[in-house]
Image (cartoon, rainbow, N blue to C red; front, top):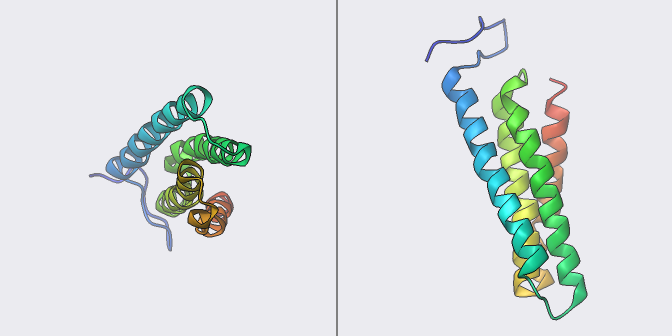
Amino acid sequence: SRPLQKAEEGRPSRTRSTMAAWQKLAGVSGAAAVGLGAYGAHGFKPKEEIYGKIFDTANKYHLLHSLLLATAPLAKRPNVVGGLCSAGIGLFSGSCYLAAVTENRQLGKLAPAGGISLMGAWLALLL
């Protein structure tokens, strides 16, 4: 692919394929978040109320960070923002969804690593 802008010293150029990949991933992630949100609202019936709250938290962060992922191509370092955001969604929301659905809080142990990754994605916008 052809670079959209000239690479500045110390700054990699962005390509159409890189930008399209993050937007496609954001589309899939956002659609999954909406589908999981519908399941959480209408189909998920945990035995303990806390697991419903954990599921809702996972979904809220999943949907919000799918939007951040969609903006990754606009960042100066799209692969840093997109990579950290994707990892964060998977680790944070994924482990929370898993803990909620199985009603086993031990399966949510990766959530803090995911949260740090999501914070890193936001901070990467400063680069």
